[in-house]
Image (cartoon, rainbow, N blue to C red):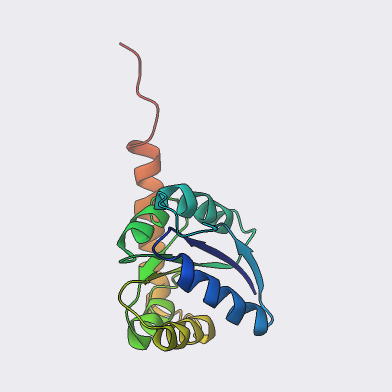
Length: 158
């Protein structure tokens, strides 16, 4: 599986440890940074990584920041992304089974390494259930398409 990783400074150490784990498991990993614990802005890292997933150049992404909220908001600004902030194995599993999440956001300040690893393992190994959930994903895609066409459409000049 091709996986994009991205973190801000607060997620840097945890991202580095997850990178090693993912490579050990044979995944191809593209690291969008950051490369240190020096202060940086999560949109600068999560935005480009989310675009790569939306373009199909990576299968999924794992994004980290202090709370996971900033990365989640950032990723969900990109059409085609369904980012889920997960705090445990259950939310990770449901985000894949029911929501077909393609980005996992993790709160680096709130989870220990073992719990993060378990969440990532569950998230990566859980398939999308389809069925009634596919109908709901289609509705999300319709909302997204409509918003892009109406809200983001060029406005006529007066």
